[in-house]
Image (cartoon, rainbow over all chains, first blue to last red; front, side, top):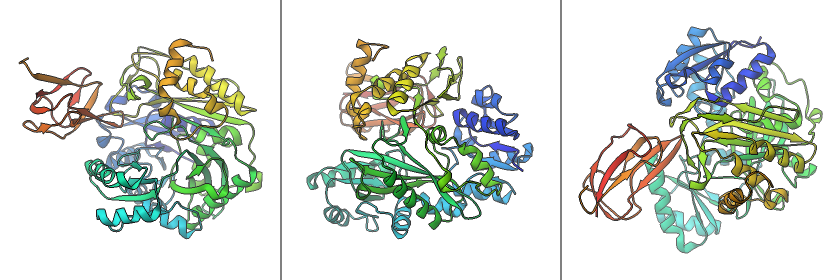
Length: 462
Length: 75
């Protein structure tokens, strides 16, 4: 039996999980901080429990507050969503101690994939190609400089405890290494850990990730790839499925690699294995990056193309059900593209834009057009929480049609009171780079000014 | 405001995450004075010119509104 499910999250993802629960007839319970008492995600659940003050540390990141809410509500399962506690092994352990089913992998699998250097070592042992790198066992400047010379330039310096692009520095040549190392360390130290690791950098990179599902009976299969190449501030605002230029043979190969890693850590649940690739796509130019042990923000593009509800399978797997389909049953139909609507200002280098949404118009759902929203007109976007307020996903028979369908939907968005990235993303979707599949991870920031100029000249037409 | 003294203001609504240059610190142009946090993004507030931080008008953890004075800086 499924449920009742406590959704230990807020906003868009909480509302999205509630939607699957409602479809399955499974009772679900929302949680809310003092800032979220009237939030949309609270109204989408059957019941709701208060969990404390607005600051996430005292509410959405507080394991005791969430465990209390689970006890009070009589929940049997806990879905962590993404962000917040979704990749914290201690949260999965706390659930188990209280006799709750954590909707996600085991604490051991979360830990195994949680550290960048350890995950890389496991992937290499499982036979996944990785970029030449150095785990940073010796943190002296001399040792790191020697390691960089051995790896070869351009090299990427990464903070071991970092995430979201913190403490990351691209070093094109040996001359810039020591200054970049000092800068990366300073930045990493602000977050309490100044250790760094090195990896060969890939110029003109693509980000490709593979969605996997594993059940408690030991079956592991993949749902194909997503392309998440577009980035700003090291975060992804647009994702698509399938990846442009992906052959069936390469999909099979990357799926095989992702499943091998999942099996190596005894993975149960939905997970994502991320790769970095150099265009044009070829098996010898795709390397393992990391594994995310949770639902991914961009999971809807996979759902629209495969017809599967990933949240449903997370719940069923967590409840002990075996996957009733096999790899050969998975089929990919058409093309889906997702845009993350964020309260941010592309004209000011994507600076966040908290505030009250005096007016808001989002696209209406239609055939092949999905809206996952976490807010409504009149809501206030607090500086305490993520700037993503909704996702719009378009599905069409071809990539060209899906890109245009999404661009049209985004151009219909209206927001007053906060800045919204919708029109900017529409311009990016209609750029020749995107249309022709020539984008790389630097494209969005490099083309920012040109895309903004195209907006002021022709506000709503291609 | 006295001559040669600049007031540094918050660009957006945020919480003060870290003060990196307490009162009395000499800072170079574009060196961070404090770091704000808004919508999960850390936003360094940079000195508009070189000088000495005269006074910090906020504390770590405090919420600030857009336009709120954060610190004063003497050239």
